[in-house]
Length: 166
Image (cartoon, rainbow, N blue to C red; front, side, top):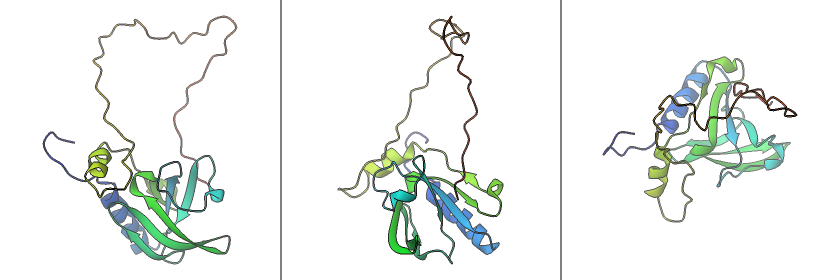
């Protein structure tokens, strides 16, 4: 965020736009939710590895409300009706079931700290914070060697991936 300008995070606006685009094009919007955030209210027994995929298409949910704070709706899980609430900060991506490559991963926004601080009392504060930028001096001091020492296993670093669970 720029110095001096206080605006709410753009995540809800992007999410609403993507949702409308998918529905207008007869696609099935789904969201990936990190269930480890406070205020997530849904049947956790359907989550896997801290993540749940929710179909939020008009045919799958009732009373869908997407506002700047979160997403709420009524849906059935295993035939049992539930009220669902997902704080906006817990939504990690939105994509159409028909082609996940058309979706968007929603990056963390430092703006959630300010947004949650200025909201009504009694609600939890976001868990994101700004990180100070560290100048890279080009020095290799205190940088761990990538070569394993004798007897140690070499750790392979992989690109992060998003696993889609249906």
